[in-house]
Length: 386
Image 1 (cartoon, rainbow, N blue to C red):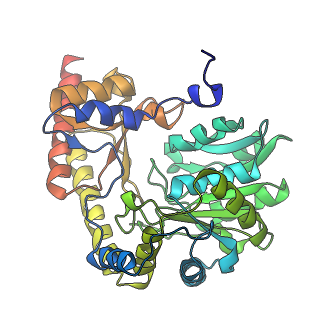
Image 2 (image 1 turned 180 degrees about the vertical axis):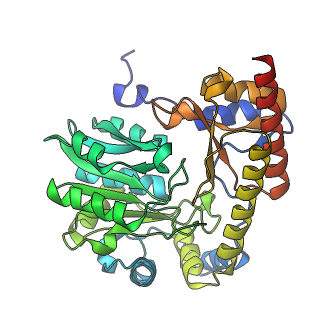
């Protein structure tokens, strides 16, 4: 038979999913490898979905989403993010991941380059490779708080560069980019006439500092801002996100959506309306628990003399395993076998990240504490044997 398409075959498997697959074959595993909140979706959101079913929301919607939802999102973006966009400039997507893919597919073509963060979420590079775009990595240096160096970023830009992609709060680093850094990146995009894709799916999960949306300072239409309901409202399985952009770009998003997915589930869209118009105390309580989880882990690791980087946002923590003598995949597999704790291998977040593993602390406190203790004991035993 003829070979399969290189565009897909050459995409590496996510190391996160690989570890998940191994862990699923074992019993009593503490799952700290995936960014899935342990909370259930709030009751009022589920009730809205049930009502939508009873009210007949079981059909196709417009490609870019229900007009009622897009109007609500435009209001939220203005109030919360300072982004002035019309409902016609918003595209509702099946999750934040498809929002990022839609942005890349719409603005870039084969042969272009896009600047991506490293360490960074692996799906960014997967998506670029599918369309024949070359990923070029700018470094998020731990000595600088996992913030980008604007001089390095500038040095990577050439005539093939089409866009810069940023992610704040960051997965996997947990860094929250301050306003001067974000304004500097937007200035670079303006100087070199680039698009700026700003992935802000963790916008609500900030412990120190403040979240800023560069789209609020954009008066040219070069910023495409990605959001999701998955993290803040514990709606990972509902598959709903959105992009704020220009009306012209949004029209092309709609064509891309039609060719791939038609539209987002109508029930999920009505649930999303309830999420943004209903009580928000759930979000604050969830973030407070994540902050407590983070502080407990940091205390456990500090007591064991282990180097971990304190995140200011999101719900991930990078652990430096460079002194263990193991690469990140070997470390994760040995930890899983010995201690039944699953974490994500650093190499999946970029070619220079093999000395890290990522811990996701969006779980219940008991699991987080026990998982951290097992990790600390595992590393201590490695040091003793070394």
